[in-house]
View 1: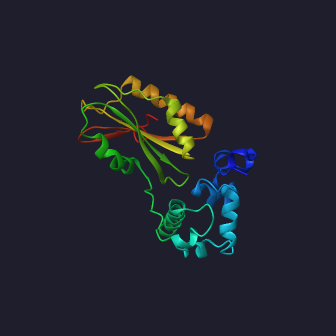
View 2: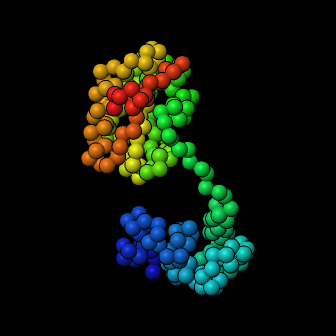
View 3: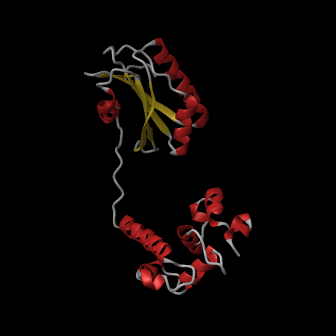
Length: 225
């Protein structure tokens, strides 16, 4: 039976989106890679047959050649190459070390991360560093870019991004093209707004840094946070 006629829970792509990648069986994952089955059986059924031929072992499957895979009805050259490419990606991934994430212990660490992005600009940009419980950097993103004197940030977008990355702490930063390190009233207001919003979501605003061409100021270090 073609996948489009299966119940919603039996469609691997839909299941992936609704329940997450961990909910898929090996045959469903292989079916997603293949994209379709044959005239007589669905992609999931074909995937089960292929995996059964190698005792449901991914390592043994990776030993098959394109010609070996093409012996299965419904597997052409394109599908065979797609399967082998996916297995090769898995092999390369397993051989790579997880890159060490930067740990931010103070405002200077955050400044060094963002200095190159913000110190020499002629217009204001607003950036954020997202951290986990150990103050390791999860994600860095530019949120806005604006005029000479101000760059407005949408607090909702900031916290959506924090939630998307499972962040528990945020450091925000923007530049002052004028060279002044004095926070404006808008800088103070947005800092408090973000700080209060973070309390509701249990996401702590750890610092707000203003960066100029030559230096920076930390709201946390100066008691402004």
